Image (cartoon, rainbow, N blue to C red):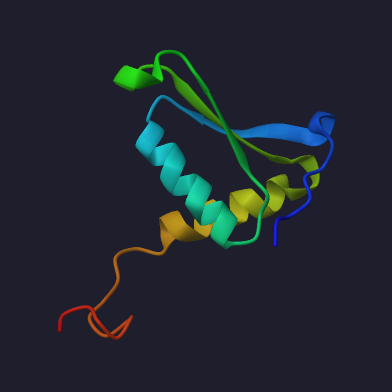
Length: 87
């Protein structure tokens, strides 16, 4: 089931980076947390030169920031954390 997107004027740039891989990781992280997110790329993406902007609905900016902060502060998994690490 596809999430309904808020009207375009209610979307805000949440994160901007020249690293398209980083943007893709954050895009997947936010989507997995249930936060609507779209990516806009500018520049010559064929060579990875340009900017990737992640946009989220204005009312979800705080949620998006919390999800990213929690992921960055989580640290590396320890043996046994996910049932597969270290086996």
